[in-house]
Length: 70
Image (cartoon, rainbow, N blue to C red; front, side, top):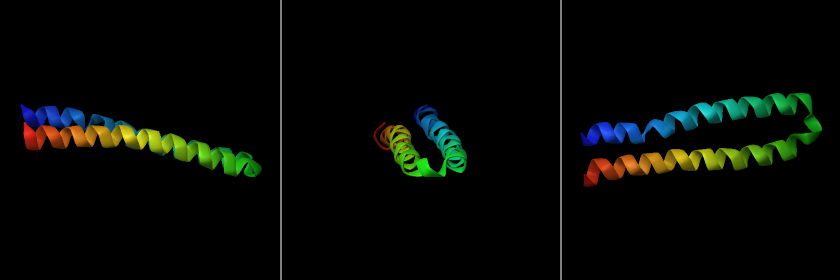
């Protein structure tokens, strides 16, 4: 039962990977349309990727806690 719970905790990692790919693709499209705004787009992209990655890390840490403690 613990392994099923750990697998469910890893679902945010899948969502984070998909959303990070979509965000990066949209940022590349935005820079292609407006190269002069690349600095602002890059900074916003990095902020969004950091927040998305934190959700994946929380899910991963929770899964590790369930596996090794539970």
